[in-house]
Image (cartoon, rainbow over all chains, first blue to last red; front, side):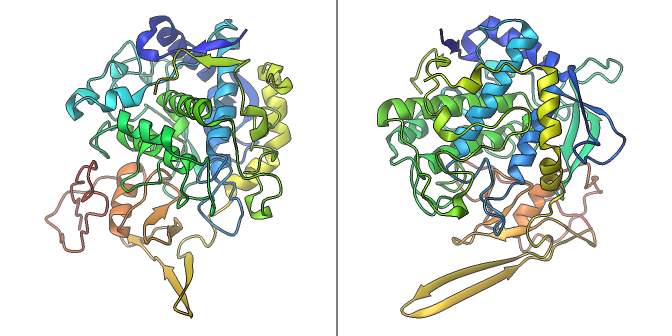
Length: 317
Length: 140
């Protein structure tokens, strides 16, 4: 039976379990080490949660093709929704194990609902309360992800990237600068436009493409919209390629996934490019392997229909 | 459709196994400098009325007298981007670098604010609806 992914602001149990699960995975260490992944500094074990941070960076540094600096194995190309669906499902499976709750569904943040509020009310949304994701700040000072130097079990950022885009080991609190980079979140009018935007994707399959994927990712307009706008609006650790450091990353992407699901419900489970597309699109075609680190790979074709595995409490976006 | 691989429930042991299997590829990616590195050249090409046009753009950026090592690129529509701030695009390289300084505070410790020059500020993102004006942080 399919699990149900809930709206985090409407489900107190999911809210509490998500924070608990993230902190459990933050303190679950595998035998993987920073040294084994070439991260400079002393060799330290990497937690299951932090492997998601590294995985995102690896995908982002996998250029597709290597002759350019824009389209990578997870972004700025057709695979954007599919790769993140794969990543979300891996996190969900790990959270289920950590929580010992196989029915746990990853919650989403319906940011367009907040986006319809005034800018000052957006910053005061319940998602930033101490019983949800915590507040803004450098570092944040409220909520389940506050860094306490004296408590080694407390949430902390252990791996981030420097300004040259190289991973490094750190030990610090989570940073957010809510509303500093953009005045407003995406709005309902944006998600409505997304659902009406067809086809799925178009040549040249990058940030200049027409179609749903590029609109959803957020490159279709300037300033950036949709998914990109959420990263920019939250700010802080949501801005560099190590953005999974902020647990809000997964709530944002779960909503992105929900919008994709709503789009497919309306427009059909179509995906392009197909397998006969140019080799320059390797990593983005229907049956190409998705960039993986912590599990076997999968392909876009395998994640187009996940309705037997999970559904959303609503597809009204 | 139920995907067979989805049924494989991860464990710390299985995760370590796959990380080990993928480690060499991951290390290679993580060590990779962006194509061209600092001073990377972006080549934009188009044809117009039978004429072939090639525009080559290179950014060489110094921050506090030190070269900035990130590879800055420019899109066909002239927007500037940097992989280290992957969700943003800028109409000005100056605004991009201001954002880099904000996003990586550990790399650029705060200096005492002076009343530096403000000319050259182009309000790359800030002039657009929905984006806040970033305060010009001038340092000597």
